[in-house]
Length: 68
Image (cartoon, rainbow, N blue to C red; front, side):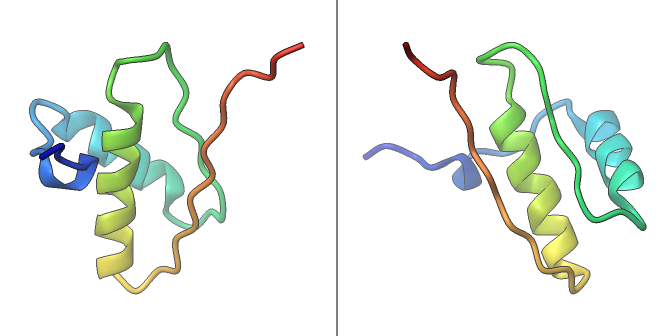
């Protein structure tokens, strides 16, 4: 069985979590950007969970590089 991002705990990312939530507060859009494999999706999923619990409607957009 492969675990989804939501089943894994968010470890040692409390500061980043709070920074993203603070940045989103009062805004309508936020982006989490960095190199691949650093936990952006997991962090974004946790931010979404927190905001949904606060009554926000959350949409997710995933991207990948275009190929030519």
